[in-house]
Image 1 (cartoon, rainbow over the protein chains, first blue to last red):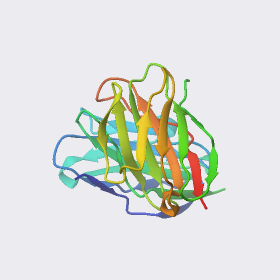
Image 2: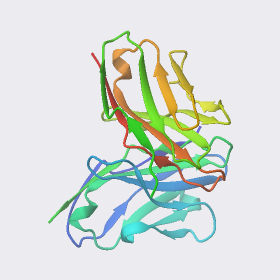
Image 3: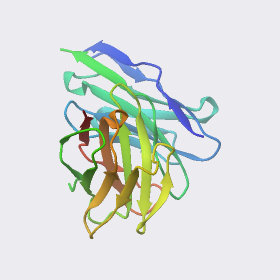
Image 4: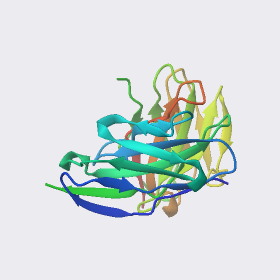
Length: 114
Length: 114
């Protein structure tokens, strides 16, 4: 069975600080990896995804994530956060099978102080 | 950009009653999903649906749950006899054909069982 763990439940940063949110997964086969963001009162939105190729993927709003296969990790980074990045961030994985169900991590709630 | 829409946004129901949560997936998407998030817990997969049948379901999706695509646009989740522990946020998602296509989520329905 696949599982995802996110190390930080709550992160508080000041504007312009750098961000790194950890994500580790457990799965026996080929995986697709995602980061979703949920702004207050809004739906889950895709930030970025990794399927194959360059392990460093760039997403929207200046976010990027690096897939390190040997560490089963897919950490999310942003060099300089803004107040508008305040949201909850979810790492998710699915196996490359027909149903493609997503398994989510527990989420990290990020608060950026102005 | 087209969106997944869910109604109602909040449903309050007495324990033991039936409830139907409605979703309108994005029009050219063929794969549909339901997830739920109990307050303070992870987003959990319930069921995936393709070609008018369930393709995968989790242990949560027991005989009390059913899904249906009654017409060309709606995708519904029915809970026959609700329990207190069914209180959660329920998210619908859809995606296009192709294993690299990400899932797009609706805003969710908050289900409160009294």
